[in-house]
Amino acid sequence: MSGVWCFSAFAAPLKIELPPETGVFKPAPGVELANGQCLVCHSVEYVVTQPPSPRTFWATSVKKMREKYGAAVADEQVEPLLDYLTKHYGVEATNSAASAATLPKPVTLTPPGTPIRGAAVATNYWCLSCHALTAKKVGPPYKDIAAKYRNDPEAYAKIAEQVQKGGSGKWGPVVMPPFPMVSAAETSAVAEWILNQK
Image (cartoon, rainbow, N blue to C red; front, side, top):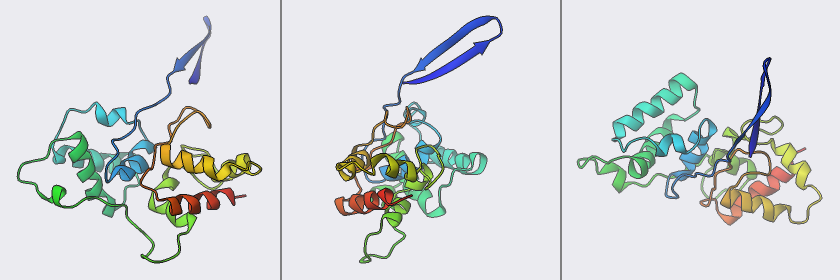
């Protein structure tokens, strides 16, 4: 739980306990976009409490997040993100078969067949939206994670579990969303890359 202390000149300090966030996006093709982009700024509840709405509503919302709040959603991510949000949290128009015909996929920035590198995995799954190498963003910096697990023989397994299942509590109340779509090879590569940060 996260504690928030409130002070007043007229009253004793009051500590308010906030429950940890536990909501996650529905696992389906495209969830990595929602996890990597939406959870940087707000909880899942912001999405799931919206009334089921058509694609135009989600398009307006994504546009607002990009233009008004500076969300770093790349141009090529917008349509797949809208497909995911519309399919799982909205209503699809009967004359729109495009989203049913194509499943959104992660935007891969490395050519197929090249060796898997941890930095590329972190980029492909938008890990760097929440984590930086040396400074705290939404989540802890990778150098702090490396320092915490440097002498832990189970470091790889712990990082792999965090990537695959998500969680909270190790670094505060902010939820790390699950990324079950990351392959075992990708998970191993990104874990090795994180643990080599200094």
